[in-house]
Amino acid sequence: QQQVKQSPQSLIVQKGGISIINCAYENTAFDYFPWYQQFPGKGPALLIAIRPDVSEKKEGRFTISFNKSAKQFSLHIMDSQPGDSATYFCAASKTSGSRLTFGEGTQLTVNP
Amino acid sequence: EAGVAQSPRYKIIEKRQSVAFWCNPISGHATLYWYQQILGQGPKLLIQFQNNGVVDDSQLPKDRFSAERLKGVDSTLKIQPAKLEDSAVYLCASRLTSIGGEQFFGPGTRLTVL
Image 1 (cartoon, rainbow over the protein chains, first blue to last red):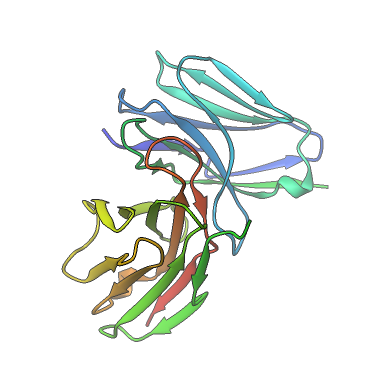
Image 2: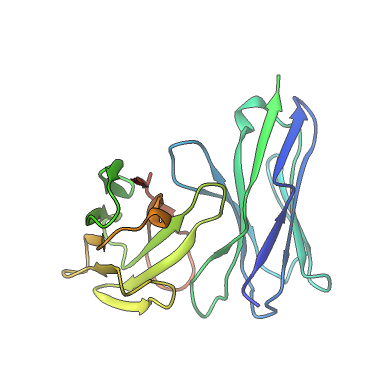
């Protein structure tokens, strides 16, 4: 019930390409879905987040797509850059509490 | 604005030894979290404080892990005695309030248990 499953485990994309990372959740009580970016030796940093009342949210080159009926959400990185190379984590939580349940992570490599 | 500070950044100990990690959250942040991040996995919440009270410690292995936040500011996480499977990065995060808003993470302490 508390799991968030993330795929793929690793992803290699060419510069300028589109990176797509997918997550699925089980607990229908989750209503906050953030994506975190983590560079080696650093803590995770919030990238973008969505609530289930919208199906898509875009901030610059980053877009979250949300499918409530399928209990899935995804991160799209447009025009991927070598500086985007990092590990990306999806997460979910209930607004009433603040525990974040994280996915397993996706290691993204953007080749120049 | 200064971020979440953690120390030490790295620690290597033998199994059955004790270790303590320190966290200083962002000034004014009432909520503080400790996460365990095993290599290749996402962070897992160990304990959440609201000021100096524990809100959620359901995933804290209480037979060996303890944490405190006595004055509602700094926090210490202790492991006693350590096991090999405790090797991980221990992340501290803070948030202004308990509901809503962003969690800000520190750089973490990488623990290696030999």
